Image: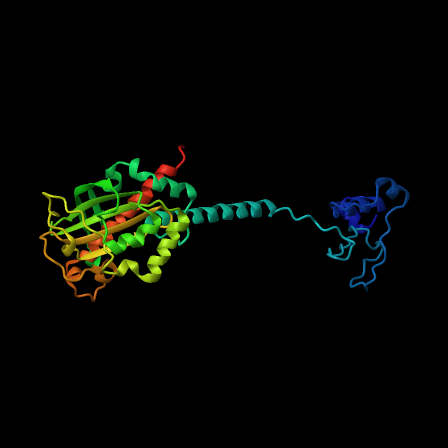
Length: 340
């Protein structure tokens, strides 16, 4: 027993005990020597390939007082000697993230499609077949108050973004198209046919302007409506003053004097996702004659100085037609929704 062992009150450490201590410093190593082999072949530390930096005290055996520690070689990838550890930690989170992105993407696409349908910003192509068919049947299955509400609010629809309110004063019986359009406009609409025409006349809050809004339900399919819209756009048929809708001048109302010569501004929209044409024509409630009617798009320009523009009649026609069109789209959407 060495002096240091005696001072510590401990027995000298045998080769086997050194080995057991060394084994405790190698957790998880599969190449540790077994207890049987250690009993037969006591542990003898191998000489270090590097020069010693310290000298063991005299009378002691090098390595007898502390376990022999070797440093494992670093793991390498591609050398073929080390197994690559499987990478499982992020597989599930990545799959969940990918699924979430797909759901959100479909939701955004669906929201965009629904939004464009409701606001009237349809593409030049047809909508869904179910919605198209449902829209063509609304004229005989939906109450008039759905298509032409008694009161229509036009928030921001007036000049400079002012608000408008229109009150319905007359509803025309559903008829054909013989007495609803100028002859040239009726001829331009002939390719899609006239299944039914619904009309109503409104007055503004000041009762100084009257506007007739109409829904022409056609006999055409989606391709026919797309073709008609392309023709109107190419030839500018919705801007010609010889192709105007006629007002509905109901007797005993503020629109009684609203005739051909009182038309001041108008708008007409050919839909492609429904077999319908939406239009509106506006004028003065006092029956004054207007020399030159102006398309609503021109009358709404800030620098326009015509009588229709100065009176805001372009905004009257466009604002009311847009809201009736939106109402039509909402009604179609409700009709085609599956019950929950």
